[in-house]
Every structure is written in structure tokens, then in C-alpha cells.
Image 1: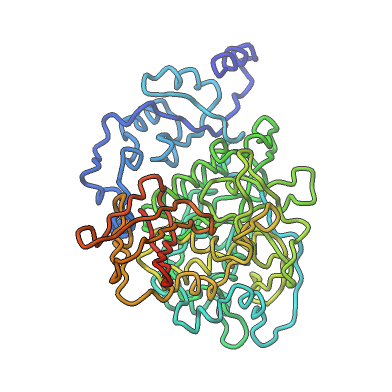
Image 2 (image 1 turned 45 degrees about the vertical axis):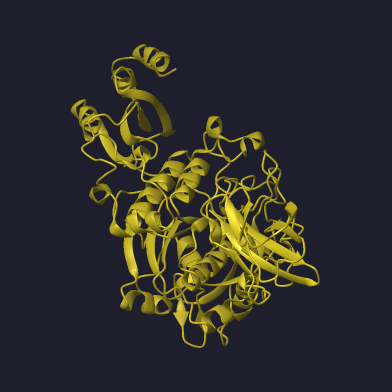
Length: 533
């Protein structure tokens, strides 16, 4: 396709200037890279390595940086190179369209993708705020939206995000570095990293205030007036989107930011962005591509999740439009796609619906997105509506839960939030699993009171058997296992005697996840919670 394009361009008069565009060049391999899996400290921070180790996640060749020799060969052709991607194994370039045939002929180049026209290193435009209003200050102006998720109880338990690292991807953070509601964040130096992938600079306190409002839900703090859901967490602010246009480059900027966050050891990504239609219609996604495997940004979100990061994103504001469905990356499996509800707990009419093309429930959970109280770039309190504002509320809850249960994996965090939410037993494609809540999580995780001297172990289960040890072996024992949704997945009657106590019970058919083991022996009964890894 590109060679044909170049052939056509040759026919244009010599005086005509060739178009300079932005492309992503995919490499065939990583041959010649000086990095190795055995020495990850050369390309990942100690926090990133520790996050993987704590969740038993292996470092693979996908994590290796691209071959610098390949990038240099592009530079030798006079091509402007910018951000590389470990996960996509390639590099973002700006070049004239007439050089594409030369680039594609290089033996290490797999293919070339047009991601945006024009020379400006800039990208797209998705706005998720629906309505914005100023409001007068009042005591704890955002109390209701926090209470809906049980965040006051989370704060009272001492979980305000301390030690948790959160990355926020957005279109600009105007006023965050100067206004009073963010002064605690700045004075305590908890903005750990900033980068603007739109303009290739560290400056993010510019361009737009959408990110300001999203961040305020998480991190703003004014004593007695406004409390962010995770106002003592550490933050990594990445500007990935340009509101002036919409092109595929935004999906790659998102990937560059996710890789940077991964390398820095970030635990949570909040992304109030979504992409389905572009200024170039050839880039548009179709509804049948919402399969969790097609959109570039969706695949990038999956890679982040696989590296032990909890990805929280807005589900989209397409509910009362022709598209209706969630927008990528909300279709990714394992991403916490957040829909919007009103103060009364009803679905906001604009909130995107599910299911995905492969019939998974979406959104995953919901939070207040109609009239969410935010901080403006001016520092004033206001309200805004959209799934963009629901997403950081859930990200705040994730931060507090992970602080309370630091040994949990990202997968376990996702599971406890969804399986303890308000309609976990009957999820649908309007509200997903419902409204998550800190106190519900605590209740969900509280161990049932076991019969004295009865044991079920190990927990977590690292193999395919659990040991059941009882103090009474005179009667047959009924063993029933339920998954996190309450569905019966395994059942058997066993006889324990002095020779097989503890009894090794086989759970090979079960996938990784949370299970409840109900033991019944005569009139005695106990239920144990176990996690199979």
C-alpha cells in the first residue's frame, strides 16, 4: 500500500512539497539490543521489578527496549525519530511520505502505520466531560460522591493513598502547579513525574483543564472543603492527548505513557479517555471490533494489566448516541471500565453500555458521573458530568483497598472490587457489577467464623490441591466449592480417616481466582475463603 502511494506521489510535479506525516514503524525483532531479561534493572526501576516479583509476573522479551541500532539506521536516513515502544517493538517517526518505500525496504522493518497527518508532533481530541458548572463552596463539597463508595470509612481506617503510585493520562493539567487545592500535593513533592507526549516535553500544566478536574477527584485537598479520594498518593502525570484533533497517534501516546508508568513502578493507571471515531474515517473502529483484542489502545491496556497494573478507565459517554457501547480501551478484559450514575444511584443516560463483542459484561463498575464535584484550573469548586469523573473516584477506591491489602495482586484487586459491588450476583450491561464500596470490600474479605479446630489450607493455593483437616472424622464430609459470584463449581463427598487427615482435595479443574470452600460434617458446617493462584 505504501509503495503504491509513493509511486503516485512521484507523478506530482517536482516543485510540489512532499507531505510530512507521523508514522509508527514496527520492527521484526529486537536483535542487537544490549538489554537482557536477566538484568532488568537496566531498563526497569526497582519499584517496577518489585511489583512484578510480588505478583509472580515474569519479565519477558516484550519488556526489552527496542534495538537502538534499528532506530539509528532510521536516523541515518534523515528520519526524525521520537518515542520508542517496548511492547509494540517500534518507534514513532515524522517523515515525508516519499521516504516510506526506503524505510519499508529495510530488513528489520515489519510494517509502517500512518498515525497522524502533518509534521506537528501532536495528537487527538476525546473530551469526556459532558457538562460543567461552577458552584459555591460548601463544607466538604464532594462528600456525597465519596460516601457513595464508602471512601470516608476508607480514610477513617487510615487508607488515603499513602505509598500508592497512580498515573493519570489526560489532555492537560492547567493550574495543578499553582492553585491552592493542589498545594498539599505540590508541597509534599508527590508529583513524581510529568511528561507531555503531545509536544515531547516535561510540561503538562498546560493545554487543557480536563486532566485538572480528573486529578482533583483523586488528589485535591482543602481542609473542610474538598477531599480527594486518594489525596496522599504519589502521582505521575502524562499528557497523551491533544484536544485539537483526533488521530490514531493518541493510542500510541497512551502506550508510550503506559510503558513509562510501568517502568517507574506505577500501580494504578487512571485514563479518562476513549477512542472509537477519528478525523480520518479510515481509522475508525467498528462495533464488532470491541472484542478486547483489536484496538491498539485496548491491547496496550491489556499489556499494562499483565504487568501487574490496575487500569481504571472511563467507559465512554456514548449511551444516548448512535454508538451506545463502551469505547476502547474499556473493552479490554480486566480493565476496570467505569460507567456513570446519578446521586440516586441510577444510570446516567449518557453512560456507555455493554456488552463487548465477545459478550463480556461492561461497564465493570459505576460511580458518580452526573454532577461530580471537581476543582477547576482556577482553583474554584465546580461540577462536571461524564464517565471521565466517575473513573477517578473508582481509582481512588482502588488505591485505598490496595493500601489496606498490599499483598494483593492487581488481578485480586479487580476481583474484590467487582465481586463485592452492589449487584455482583446479577451483573448487567447498564451498571456492570454495580457500585463498589470500601466497606463492602471489607465485609467480602472477612473470613467466616470457622468451626474450632477445622482447617483448610494453604491459602493462597499454589498447586492443585487443598488440605482439609478436621477434628471429627466419624462421619462423611460434604465439600462444596463456590466461585466469587456464588456459583457452585465443585462438589464431592469424602471420607476422612486417621490415615488421610488432612485430606488432599483435588481442585485441578478450577482456574485461578477466589473460591469459598463449604465443609459439612453432620450438623457442623464451616466456610473458608481460599485464593487459587
